[in-house]
Length: 76
Image (cartoon, rainbow, N blue to C red; front, top):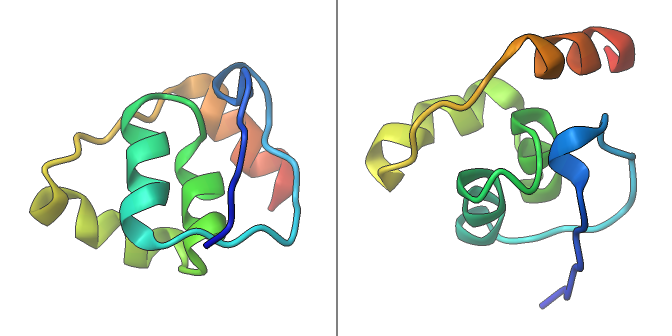
């Protein structure tokens, strides 16, 4: 298991690292607004689309705003 400390990532564009978490852990960080949707997908080793389709079953609401869209467009 990878241990990951995340501080303030919800306010900035996420970095790109080699960390990997299981899907449940990545969704937990996303639910807590500690990482963006694209960063949670990256951490889980999934595409954003694949993570999006898992949100309803995991009981996680979509938290996507203009700031996150800008970050995604800058890193795409």
